Length: 261
Image 1 (cartoon, rainbow, N blue to C red):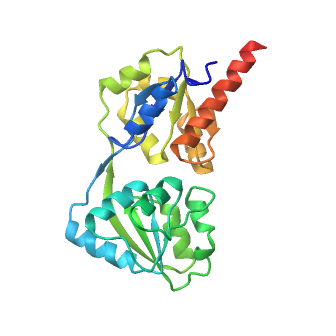
Image 2 (image 1 turned 180 degrees about the vertical axis):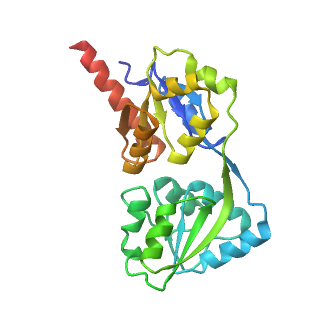
């Protein structure tokens, strides 16, 4: 195994939204792997920018404001400044980095990078009657809504972007049909993205996808992967690109070592 190119001989499916996986694809190539673009969604600006700007201001005036993704930060910045007195929360390191680049130096993130991790933060305990802003996309993190409502918080949403199914075509299906002797690792970004992909590909391409190994960053995503039909699911330490690829490298290294025995 070439330590400089530990992903040589592997295929890595990238399910991030259309247009956002280029840096990750370059990283895969640098490590010797073959990236497959398989976008699980397409991100769009809100239809009514004026109304959304008003929603964003209200959310940012809350005592705690949660940005659900790096895309939420990106689209929110187009609508106005993000600075304020609120305690700013990110679900993980990627969103945290985006917030700090936007000037939110007081932003925090949980050790567990998912909704459960956010809900376990001390700042979201004892929130009865407090205003909690959530900045994200329509149809986003339902668990946050349900649990914060159960805690009697006042939740204010700012839907700063929309997630639509990406348009998948023959190129995407053909990429899965080729080189099937090479192991396939699927870097899952969300359960919604997985559902969109399975709904947009023909049956044979779906079978090729599910024959691969799903790389997930949360127990809920692992459950979704297994329900979809993945026989093999591996857990990464976080949703960060480096953590996802580290899980693949560790697995390929282990398999290589077994072959040498």
